[in-house]
Image (cartoon, rainbow, N blue to C red; front, top):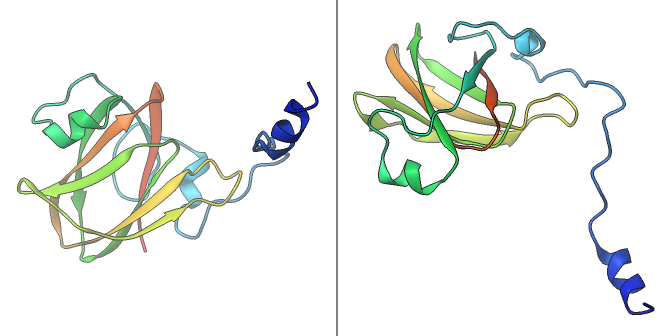
Length: 144
């Protein structure tokens, strides 16, 4: 038993519960009010599926569930995709995956786990999420 005490002291402490909800970062004011229609500037929830049409080997290898959502980008710029839970984010246009331009975490206690930025031109895109472990995942796409 005496040997266990030092090991317990070195263990990571349990994450502290959030006493209050923190405000989302700039551009994500609508985060607290989920809607049901995917689009730019509004939060929506996505349920994962065991398979998504056209799922790549890389997406399957990430485990969990996947989802694909169609979005239209109205003007050129950098767009940030925020998620409530862990998942991989890919943005595709004409079957080509767009390269991300930045990665960040949401503020503690805001409900946003990660934010990934993409430089996009006007047009039709497919937002692909993979490796989803949660039953559903909150998503918001906001211009930066």
